[in-house]
Image 1 (cartoon, helix red, strand yellow):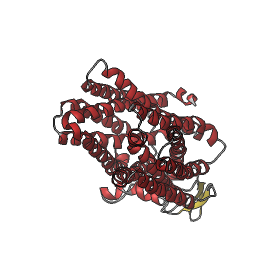
Image 2 (image 1 turned 90 degrees about the vertical axis):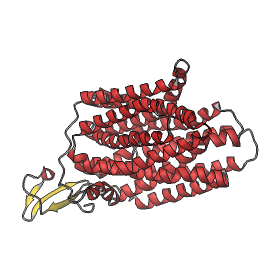
Image 3 (image 1 turned 180 degrees about the vertical axis):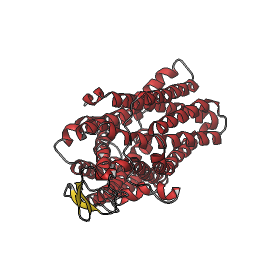
Image 4 (image 1 turned 180 degrees about the horizontal axis):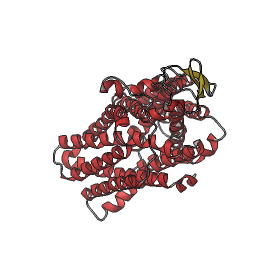
Length: 447
């Protein structure tokens, strides 16, 4: 897997991702302590609102990035997002009002919504071979999971010698280092747009989503995102409730439960490159999604049981399997996006995936929290389990079982020398060539 780090450009970009993630993790811890200082017992409400603001920023900003991506140099967009995030982190220690927290969080997450899909769309150009790209996706998944384990531990160690406000400086350093690494990376030139997207900014902003929804495989990916969001919301929102209230265990066990989820995800991410050499993306992703309803059934048994020493190891096992199942869906998703989108449309499609997947989380987070609080954990488990089951079955139905191969077709309205016609054969009616089907500005539906 580590062989892809021999690529100098990818190595710099991956390092930029890692240091930015560590900075974000430190900010997460510091933000919780800041909210407590400002709001006291109302800190939970402040953080809940901040989480909602984060999701709204992701859903709203990412499509706009897709609209502007072909008009701005990618390096400028990435570095500008990092500089914005560093500036916001530098201001956070000085806020004294809740509304100031909300404004800065929106700016911070809006910059992240600009950075992440653009960054994701660059990697396929840096690593064009699918085998290398698969390993890069697994490394990225490992980086996210390790950050969730490492950053809280690092924050705890730092808080033993400094106050939490200094953690924000770690965040500033992370984003500044990320910007410096991106500046020093020789990014490949993006593919020339097949044709300019006509119409208003709104039309261009929704172009990625329209392309996304025009392809059966990507519609299936959206259903898979919903299944993962249903499972992930239960873990994120209700782990503390399960550990402290339902099982009556100590606060330290919350970290063990979340660590089990991360460990399961990391284990699968390490195994997937070899697995994907033998199995298709469809087989791996659908199996991961269909495992989630079974895990919800097991979680329902743990929730319904009034007592029993088996419930704690049962919860740890369920969380580890849940992390593994989610990784089976999320890790290969980039391969699918790269395969189904034309090179010139990748940033728009990655932005659409970023926005649409977070729309799923925006639905499942409140469902897990509010329903669990109002009607009990069992009701939340049943409702989100039903969502995961329905979404998984829908994905299986939407995703064609036969792998599409290159399809021969003609273009009758493109001028000689158009970039899309490289390697095409001149025929009486225009140009004929073959490629993997996708929907883009030149193909109003998959060819």
